[in-house]
Image (cartoon, rainbow, N blue to C red):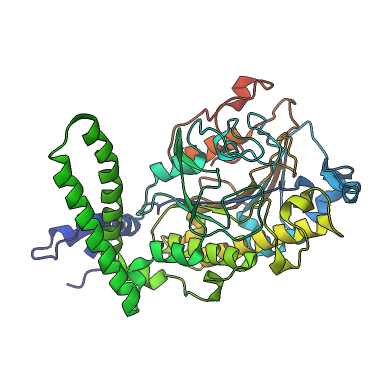
Length: 481
């Protein structure tokens, strides 16, 4: 009797003489078995966090602009901002289908994904610190940091919470072009700490700034040349040696010294176990590893950003992680690849010939990369649909609505759907203005993300004392399916 793929997956553990499956591979077997049984595929998140604000008025589709956009000072300094556009506040919830409406010029790359797109306006985040950045507060909903310092980590951020709830071989993958928010224009390499993500109080999540290094860390088992293969073997041997050496030393110690050594042992064992997991899924990783080209060693900002998005796509498709956060720029970034003559900070202050136009081009570049990522996920079959059906891409800024943010508005762009749990189905949603009845906050949005993946969470971070506390509890009912 010839068995179908579904029958094989169901019966595999019971077949006499079947090849034993490594315990480390079992999560992937379970995913395949769940798919064969018609169960929901895993859910995934990609957070894309830009600097210097996300302009609400320039997210409004063209047909709505006459109703929702007014001319005026956007609140930035500099004479070139006097004719900037601002979003017209509303007293009532606006929930309109995008349908045939033409997206803003900077968002044209998302036209093919309008049926999986939600534009959210009017949420506030004044429990956070405004100004140049809200640091950890942008995803943690609490006050953190100052102009140059990320400050104390009061609690976990939403990507850290989701990473713990939906762990992969790599619980969280952070990719950034730089760690510093302010100062300096040079490209940063190696591990950086942009002050955005945390697993818990005082547990910051590191990011990788170098695309080539990130590739080697994520796809080391895809190595084919002799030097990389030798490096992998040496690294594996070294980790085994270090774990064994620490355990031998621990047996001779006690008390405080042993507790301190346990921290190092946990770290080395985690690295070793991760390498073993990667070896167990080597064929899958090798199949989906991105092709390394000159973007991975380039010092041009746009090249490195594109490489990070390529890595994010490959990471998700290969099943290495379910949560990725991308930090494409900082205030010191110069977008020479887009012909921009001022840094992001200077543009935010209205410097240069056309600061609004340059900011628009930067936003367009980010959204173009999001569309590329969405295209790759949509082209990857999964369950009865594709990977984009089960992934949510979230684009926003760490500084709310503008360069010197007040945090009374905090726009978001959502692409995807999380297996139908999030209704990002071609919608323009604008919530009532700050302190108006029906107003909601970014904490409500993050509660929505948590509920969508089965986390019963109705409060998040700190509350805004200027708002009714009850309105800050629970998810956004308009978005949660």
